[in-house]
Each structure stands twice: as structure tokens, then as C-alpha cells.
Length: 327
Image 1 (cartoon, one colour):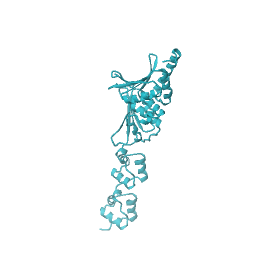
Image 2 (spheres, helix red, strand yellow):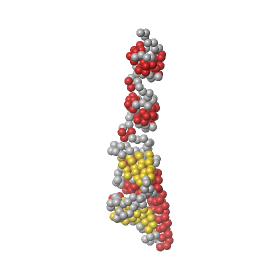
Image 3 (cartoon, one colour):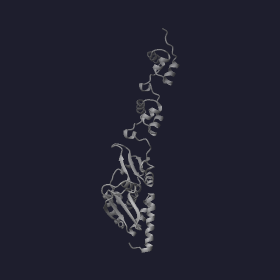
Image 4 (cartoon, one colour):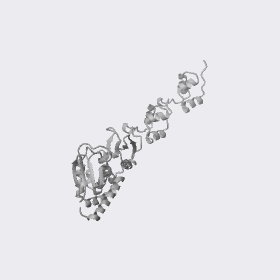
């Protein structure tokens, strides 16, 4: 049997450049795989590592782009480029690219850290305590999930505006005309997990007013009843209403309550029924309302509440013209 003649240049091209396996080369020349191994040794061609034999792996730069920048999972990289996840994991390790843990691997959409602005933070806490459900998807998750639902479009628009710069938002309309909204935020928003009012809010007037504006935008009702303007704030958490009522009275704004009210036969303006013990505080006096409206205006964000506040102010001005400044 004559010796198989495979030129060194041909073997180097097939094995090193075109990345053929020894099995593929042997099949091409109709010989056994052992023959190809012998020729590699004879020509001094360095054998590839096992992890390199069957892979057509992107460069380190491309893998960084796909895995770190685009946040593609190894599953998606496999599907898009056709090589196995095990190969991707080996290459990540070989290139020194830190792999994501389970929590990070679930993060697909870009997220931005909270601004750390205390005025904004106080408002978000107030709004959260009034209208937002906040949770972690699972205990060690790095995702803060914020959710709410309403039949009022302006409420959903407001929530969207509060968080759209920070994370991915999903909005869905249900069959009963309710709109659900959900936001995925990073861990810089973990301050929203608490259901308590932080002490720092009560120690600074601007922080308190921003917090109060958030709570009013979520749970407050500014209206005109029997031709008289009134502000009412209701919630199941009596402690929060106690804090607000005491602080308003300290600021010279007469606030009454909290009062326990039976609201089980009514529906909230956002469309959901009341349940359990419900409490309310209210500001009725014209002078107190005008004072409150004046200092709260810069912080109110809800379109409907801004319009209601203007109408209530005009109501008080008209009443003062007719009946004087008293009451």
C-alpha cells in the first residue's frame, strides 16, 4: 500500500485555517483518522485543544458585545450562532469574561440607577404607599417589580412618566376596562419595598411636601361638595394618615382625622372596591386649603389633581368674594 500523500500546506490550511476536524480530513482523503494524526505530528502542526475542535466561536470582542453589552443569554447566543452553550461557557471562562448569576441572567432590558434626588425619592415613596405594589420577583432577585392598575388613563400615564427613564414598562388593558402597568427596576429602587414612612421625610418641609404630593396623587381627592372645596385623603394604613395629619397641623394647616369610615359598599375612584377598615383625613377650612394648595402646587404631578386643585382654589376665591374671608 502506497503512503498517502497529503501536502503539508494542504493539511495546514484544512486544519488550522478552515478548522476541519481530523475526522473530516480523513473522510476527504478516504483514509483513517489515525493517519491524519500521524501527518500532523510529522509536519509539526500543533494539535488543537479539545474545546477548540468542534467550535466556530466568535472573537472575545464579539462575545463581550453579545453577552455583556446586549445581555444575550447563552441560550440565545447558541440559537443565533449555532454553537453549543457548553462551548460558550468554556469560551467565557477562557476569555476571562465574568458570567452572570441567576438573578442577572433574567435581566434582559437596560436599567438605570435611581437619581438619588431626595425630592423625587420622597414623592415616589408617597405615591408607592398610596397606589403601588412593589416586590422582588424572588428573594435573591435583582429586579424590583412595581405594579399598579387603574381605570383612569391619567393615573397610568403618571406612573409611566415616573419610571420610564429607569426601566422597562409593560402596559396592558384588561377586558373590564382596567389598565395594568408593570415596571422592572434595578436594586437602587429597593427603598420602595418598605411600607413605612422614613424619618428623614418628616424632618424637612420640602421632602414632606413632595411625599404628601405623591400620596395625594395616589390616594387624595380634591373636590367641591355642596359648593365647598375640600381635600380628603384615604388609606387603609392609619399610621401614615396620622403622620400626615400631625405634620399638616404643625405647619398651621388644620387637618381633621384620621376617621374610620365604612367604605365597603363603595368603589375607589380608580375602579377597585374598598375592603377592611378604611381611614380618612380631611382639610375643610378655606384658609387652610389655600395655604396647603400654595405650598403643594410645585410637587403635584397628576394631571387630574392639578386641574381639581385649580377649581378648588377658584371656588374658595369666589366664596371669599361672596361671604368674606372667614371660615
